[in-house]
Image (tube, rainbow, N blue to C red; front, side):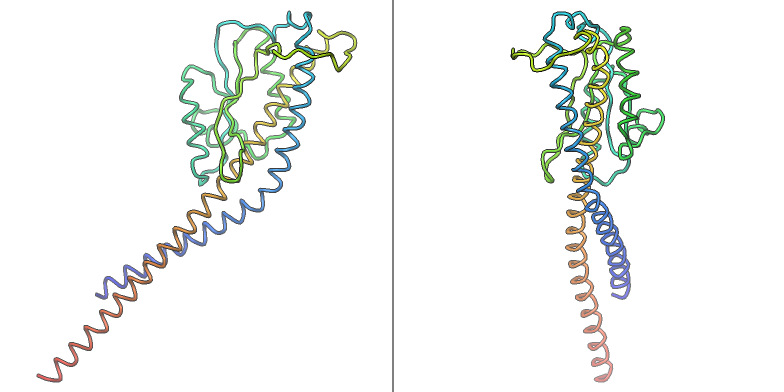
Length: 266
């Protein structure tokens, strides 16, 4: 019986350590949520504004001749955004599951987890800046215009709510003419085609930056929920172990009393 109580004490100590760890990680995630959400909303607004300008330009017959509007058969490039760390529920696993659906695509990783998985230099998803996005966008646009690949997409995690985040593919290039016709709301100088050529890299940079910021907000939310769930499970396990320990200890005491009584009667 002594061995049982000893093993239960060790197990309780281990679970208690895990409980402290999950609470600490949950607090860290909570402290990042507001800032991550603010950055996500600002990046969304910027990407939407640039998209509106690109849509206006895409309706122009001159812009239709741009290489960015060209639809050819060829290679696919995917910017894949995952986390720098684990312990975020299914956040990283959902991204990798979606990535497997494009086995022939050339992968450009953002986030330590995906860098470790596919190789390449470490690019932090948390520290990814707009300057990083612009450098990457300029390279991607140059290669696309030169015909080195035919389709560009980004695998990101869409933030729905604190409880729900969904991995998805967002296709960026080639651009298409919007189906909805509307009156022009902007005037472009010196001409629409020139502005379009300079605006597309800015658009791609805005989309990439917004995707990274939204993915990071999703990661923080997923980690917070995962740590809350793990903490509750650890508390329940600790309660069950305490109950088992008390029963084992009570049984040991009862056995000792019985042995003492039996010895006094002999």
